Structure formats: C-alpha cells, structure tokens
Length: 435
Image (cartoon, rainbow, N blue to C red):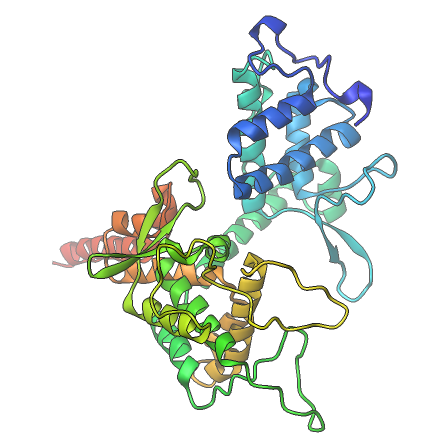
C-alpha cells in the first residue's frame, strides 16, 4: 500500500471523538470490519475477495484512499466490474481480480472477463455494507453509497459503449435479453422427477460398470486397456454424495466439513445438524430431516469404510465424506493431508458421475444428456427445492428444509405454481367473457 493512500488523512474521515472503531487508517478499518462482520470462514473468504478487489481499484486505478471515495469513484467501480481493465503500471504483481477469457476463441488473446450480474450484485452489496459499517462506526463522516441508486446491471462507460459499437439503447436491449436468458437457465439446474429417478436408478443399472474416467479423459482408443472399476468404497461414497446431498439439500462446503456426529436419530427419523451459511457457531444448528434413501446410502458407505452401520454422537472426528482408504497415489503430486475431502473434490466427483451418465441418459431423452454435462453439485440442492414445490409443500416448509434466510429465494422454486394461479385467472376471465 502506498503510504499516501492508506487513508490516515482521508477526505471523508469523521472526527476522532466520533470514531468508535478505533481505526487510524483504512487497512485497520478493513480488519476491524472483517473481524466484526465475517465470523465464519465462508463469509470471510467472500468478503476478502470483494474488499481486495475494491481496495485495488481505489488505490491503483482511481489513485484515492477508500476513506476519500466519492460518488464518482463508486459509480466507476460498478462500471469496472462490468468492463474491467488494469493500468499498465503500478498494479500489484500476481493479483488478478477477474478471470481471463480467450477472445475470439482460438486466437490465443486473453482479456479480463467482467462479472455476471449476480456477482456484481454480491460485490456491490458487500462494499455497500462495508461503507455503512464505517459510517455508523464514526470512521467516516458521511456514506457516499447513500446517494447511489440501486445497481441496475446496465452500468457501462461511454468508452466501453464505443468499443462495443453500441448505442445506450442497444446496450440496454442486449442486457434485458441476457436477463431473460439467465432466468431461463435457472430452471435447467434442477433435475425433473423423471430425470432424477433415472439418474438414481443408473447407480445400479446393468450398463453402469463403474469404469468412470477422470476429467480430461474424453475418449478411449481401441488399443487402450479398459479403465479399472471404481473400488466399492468409492462407489458407495458417490452414492452417498448423490442421495445424501439431495435429501439434505446441503451446500458442497457444508457436506465437506460435516462429521458423522452431526447425523442423529430424532424419534423414528434421522436428522442432519448443520451450522451453515448465514449461521454462527453460537447459534443452535439447523435440523434437516433425512429420507430413507439418504440413510440407506450413508449406511452402505459406512460399512464400505469398515464403520458400524449407524452414525454415533461420539464420531466428531469422523468425516461424513472421507478420502479413500488407502489413499490413491498420484505421480508428481502430493496429496492433501486430513481424512475429509474438500468441497471442490466433492463437486468434481459428482461431475464425473454426471458426465459418465450423460450419454446413457441421452438415449432416453437427448435434453438429459446436455443437462448432465453442465450439472454440478449445486444441482442437487436446486432439485430438492424444485421437487418440494412440485409436491405442493408449503413454501415455509421448503424454506426451512433449504435453510433460506430470504423467503424470496425459496419463492423461485414456486414460479410454476404462480404461473398456474395466473393461468386460472386468465381462463376465468375468458370464460366469463365467452359466457
């Protein structure tokens, strides 16, 4: 950090007597904000990602400390998230705030890829909350975010418009078309009931020989030996990932860090206790009721690992989803230590199965193959929520099962019900007029 831009004398700074944060500069204020607002690892990683990007933008692009930010700086930041560019000098070495994409494809020319609207909204919301915290703590005399309108998703600079050869009206139309395309893609994440029955049935189908390739092994030549069958433990682990992940509607990070003592009996049923997104360790854990298929898959997996069939409350050090035993040795790669898998590994293992099953699914319905090839672990959570809605389960029950803080998130699964209700009203009007 350049000393002059550390924010010790920011133009928006409040009086020392009103500064309840006790921070003397912007870096100290950031650390206090993180310690106060980001209590768990997931939130902290997300906040760090956004605040680093914003800090780099302010210091090395705008040349201004965070505590000197103006309305214009914040509007420029919103535009930058859409059309990023980096200065030729002074940018921190090895820090890349955006992904690189090849454009045009095959050209070898890579440029920074702007954030999608959902990611821009998360970034904007995080920085907005950061400024609110600094203002309420007296570190800033005023909050420039209060004068900004709501993020529209259509922010773009005049220079970017010229480079795209678009008028503002044409750009707005383009963004609205993309909004429709994004909304269409949301429905594709969930597996339909027919597709889900087929996908779970394929686990035990005769054509499934469990010779599942690793990523990158796209094809098999005639002169290549057949792939080895997955060992039983790995088969049962995948079954557990699929069926337990669906029944629990668990996020991949939650499943990866869960231990066996979190699965407990409650009366005649089994529940999963989880302190997940938006929760803190001091809170009582959420309780998610599991179905019979999930418990059967878990018991099969436990037996394959040499454990008793049922989980025990003393198994606080036994991961729900574990590394294979014995560990597979890979050439030129040191395996991570610890008994549990990472969230990324859990996701990739499910994607292996989805890709492997895709051509078989395509023989039933060609659309299923395309769906499986783009599916990831989060599809299980979407599928669970969608199936609850299709079964006409009350929206409050679904929100409780999926542990949504915002009921509007749950309502997305009930769009088809709302469409049906509107259709009934439309039909009633037509019937009245015709009568």
